[in-house]
Length: 86
Image 1: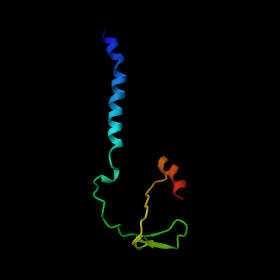
Image 2: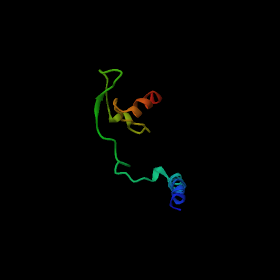
Image 3: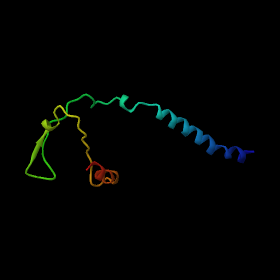
């Protein structure tokens, strides 16, 4: 009798995970709370990778919608997405 009950555990696990995934599909990702939302971009002054003699600062992003992606060369996911961003 016990072994029959154990056969239903994977099915119950599947339904449990399906419920949580279904709930996640109905969530609005833009509704997340973050302390960084609606904050001004931090001040910076850096050289570019293409031309080390060229210096850019935060005024580059003024009145523009901009994607800023911070990544590390040690990160496999970052390495995978870099060609797509270029």
